[in-house]
Image (cartoon, rainbow, N blue to C red; front, side):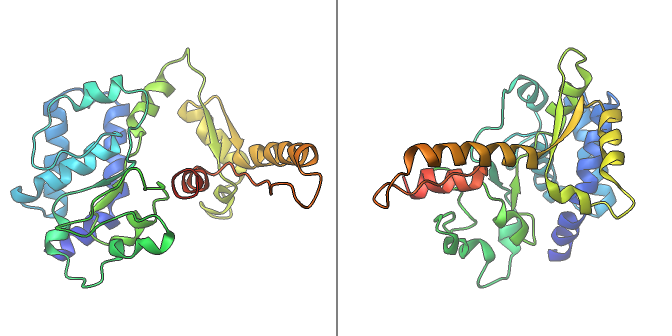
Length: 247
């Protein structure tokens, strides 16, 4: 039983890939299509009928939606197409895996060392949205896929197909080493443009802009040793930590 969940986590990106391919090719338009995708995943990875809610919830979070537990697909596609952004908490709990977890000291129970007070261990982790920093550390710490971050794969496809809306891919500097030495930034930019993005911009550009802004603010606001120390960051996790833990 445990091995099934571990395998599911390892191959989750393949499942997302199938979801994206279906939606891109126009083969994901109804409840029946969603059910067919879930059934294919169940058969491919050896799940049984009782584990179907687990599979469906991972499909939902890949659409940017909240998990629903033991419920059938209903209006997920309509909700996805009508939403303006992912609603908090970004981290979602998936029912099922915690019931078979045999870890006495589960990773999700010790995330308080990051000063968030993120989870309370009952039958499973409880996401506290007012404290969650959306850093994603707990998602990678859970071997069973009990925690997942909601992703907007399918809404992005709608934007890319809308020729009236230019969409820019902002990539972190780490992208330079994530696809091997033969995948140059030029090749990555070309690939993204072929997918439909208007262009590619490095996030480091905005870090440079922020550094210039910080220097100007520092010169204007910090004149003596008694002045307040000035600090800022463009990282959403850092911002959430200051706002929620150190207001």
